[in-house]
Image (cartoon, rainbow, N blue to C red; front, side, top):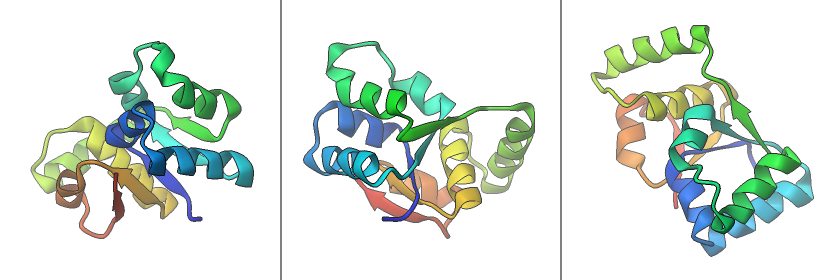
Length: 125
C-alpha cells in the first residue's frame, strides 16, 4: 500500500461505512502505515457523531495524521489556487499535501483535484 491522503469525500465514505474505506482503515491499522488528512478536511467533516467511530479510531490511533494549515502552507496554497484559477482552499491543501508526500489521494472529487494538479494519483471513492 502506498501513502494516502484522504479528502472530505473519503472521510464521509468512511463515516457511511463504505466497505472499501473500512478495508483501507483496517489496512492502515494493521500495517501500521500512516495516512494523512489536511486539518481543513477534518473541520469540514467532523460532527462528533457516534457514526464517526471509524474516523475517531483512525485519528486517535495515529493511523491518520492531521496536517496543519500553517502560515507557510497557506502561502503555498494561495499560489496553487492562483496558478490553477480555482478557489477551494481545502482541495488545494489535499493536492499540495499529496504532491509533497508523493501520495495517492482518496477522493470523491477527482475533477476538482485534477484541476489543481493533473499529475496526482487519484482513487475515486
